[in-house]
Length: 411
Image (cartoon, rainbow, N blue to C red; front, side, top):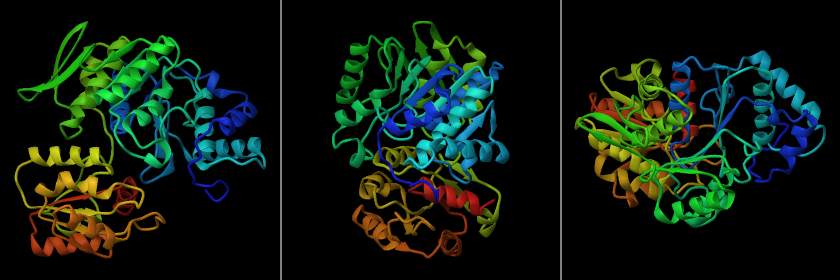
């Protein structure tokens, strides 16, 4: 990170140059499933991986950002990459890149592709970092499958101010003749995605047209042209995970996965900081009777997903400990949550230069209709809540960067 700027500069020129210097590893990957979207990419990837691995398939996976340790981004043949292997790969990429400019995300993506090209596996799951069209992962000429999860407003400074513009960037992962699975979309977003697929002759498997998924009597029901599946609800909490599961199931069915793979997808997936219950460690020990949760959602759609999850939980005084970045729609994130929250305690995200000051987060919460105050740290906020209401529900939320800090500190 000292060598390469942690900036976003959407172009593929630097990536193609370095990959060429490395011998074009992107041309030697196990079959690639490329996933873009605003929300649900990581959860969908985790479910697909769980399903494939349940059938004995060996799977590489690339995701970002990491939470506690960088190694989380690169899963090599099912296991997080080791320190020695990662160090060697990064050294090799630095040498191949020489003095030329390249960003942190670009060079680490090249390292991941290099690792995947050298290790046998049945599939490679690539999650887009930002957008799609000009994202560093968008270098595979012919993936086996592409997936676009729900698209909503986020990262407007890079992707455009309107939903059709953002959908157009996400649709940049669609490749000629390669099937694309499309999760639930707003009509204006779906129109752009379908038009791009039509231009490229890419078969579309769209929610509501070619497959459907819903909850019925505490079960997940999935239906496509191959028939109906009656499965347990996803083990990842929240009603929005039903839609994510639908996209994962559509992918697995397209790849020939059987019912065992589909059931494993919804029962065995693990994805940290998405309504993750924290039961052990220094933070839960502050007040053992508090019900402590962690979520990294940070845009209006993320706020709506958390609100829908809270709505289904048993009623209990609910406090938010919230830290956000200054690039986010803070009020848009908070408004769906206002009716579910006793009070919000705002914190600044430790060590993050783009953190929104706690006072600004507090003011946005008040504007969104919440009672709100500030605290110096997450620990201090939790201790204050414990003194006031030792049996409360507490959700630490607002940013993946805050979630990563919490996971590191909580061990």
